[in-house]
Each structure stands twice: as C-alpha cells, then as structure tokens.
Length: 323
Image 1 (tube, rainbow, N blue to C red):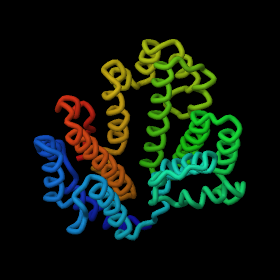
Image 2 (image 1 turned 90 degrees about the vertical axis):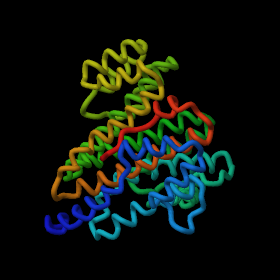
Image 3 (image 1 turned 120 degrees about the horizontal axis):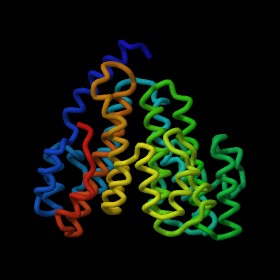
Image 4 (image 1 turned 60 degrees about the horizontal axis):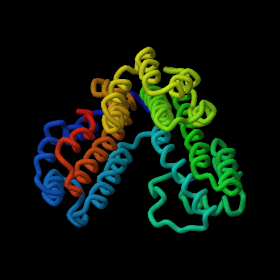
C-alpha cells in the first residue's frame, strides 16, 4: 500500500482516536454510583447501538465489532493484523481439544471473530485430520489432543497450546516488516514469559515445567528467568530488575492486581509512539490494540460496580489509556 493511502487511513484513525477514552473519561465512568448508571454513561458516549441490549456483554461485543468495521472501511491490507488474532485462534484450539476429549458441550467457549471456527477444529480433531490445520498449528494440535486423551492432564494440554501460540506470535514478529508488529510480538511474548515465571515462583513449579511453558524472546533469557523463578520471588524480581523489567518487579512486589495491570500497560507503552507516526500501518494496529485495552478496562470497571467492589480495589485494576 502506498504512503498516500496510508496517510489517508491514518488521518481517518486520528479522527477515531478523538473518541477513545482518556483517563479523565474513565474517572467519569468510575464516578457513576451503580452498574446501571455506568451502562447509561456508555450509551451516552455512543457505545453500542440503538438496538443493543443494555448489558455489558452486548455493549462491549458491539464495540469490538465496530473496531474491525472501522479498519475494514479503510481498505488496507488486513493481513498485517493477523498476528492480533493468534491468541484467539489458539484459544479456540485449546477449547476444541478439551471439548472433544471430554465429550462436553460448553456454550460460548469459542471466539467467533476468528479465522478458524472452534467447530471446524473439533471436526478435524475427531477425524484426526491434523493436516487440515494451518501448518504452524498441526504439531501442537496433535500433541495437545493425544496428551489430554492419554493423561487427562488439562494443565499440560494448556501448556502445549499456549507455548505454540507464543511461538507463532514471536515468528510473526520476526517476519514482520512493520516495527509495531515486531515490538508488539516481543512485548507480548516477554510479558507472557514473566507471567509464567511469576505463577511458577508462587506455586513452586520445576525449571523443566517452566522451560516447557515459556517461549524464547529477545529481551530476556527464558533459562535465566526459570532459574530465578525456581529460587523464589525475591530472586525473580532481582533478575527482572537486572534485565530492564524493573517496573514488572515493583508491580509483583505490590500485588497480583498491580502485576496484571503492568502486563497490559506494557503493551500500551509499546504502541504509544504510534500516536506521532504520520503514515504507516502502525497507527492502525495501535488503534486496534488501544480499543481492546479500552474495552477490557471498561469491563473491569463494570464488573467491579456490579459486584460492589470497593473503589480502591477497582482502581488498582484499571489500565492506562492510549490517549
């Protein structure tokens, strides 16, 4: 796509960015006394449509749909966004494996806005037609299915698929021409590895377990990360401080909620330079990620209000905004 076309697309996205929630808008949402008042505030901000039911799931689903309708209207190459769909794609694989192996039917378990439906994956698994999967997924599909069938170890199944997802994201980053995809992939894999290390440090998992779960990335050594985590949380935070992830270490020391918030905020920090990028696909990808972060944050606030959580508890979970 030419720079001229990207310039037009970016100009359109700049207009859309004006309606993204800022920290001040989130304060207004937080000030709503009840869940219902929050929903009313969102509709006044244009969330949902006139015929969208007044509930969180319906409104947030419609907002996610609007994001992709906006991107599609810009007539850009949608292949550049494929990396963003990988987590959902591999979630569908994980869910399909469990549905087939357990012979259960769990409503709403699959993402519908995904390149391959969960139902298709289930059919391929039942037929052991692993060749029907995209090449990067075949080995993970077969290993996860056969492992769960033989061991009934759901955690081991999760590890196999989640590691394959991280490797797919890392590969997409290495092969990408766009800086934002490379940066997004690196941050996503590194954050996931740090999450794994933190959970394993808290639960006393072995180094072998961690190395099986983590995917290599450029900004830290998974071997060193696993060794540090096995030695306890203090050693893990020391290692993170030493490799430039001091903010993650401080968040881990603060609380689990603070750490989860850091994980999402790290991605927003990665994409924020795109606010000043005049023409390239970068601002378009950043807009999609910003909308996902915005929707997730609104869901956190709505859930807190619905469950009568203290305001301080909700604030601890609120993510940074893109704008």
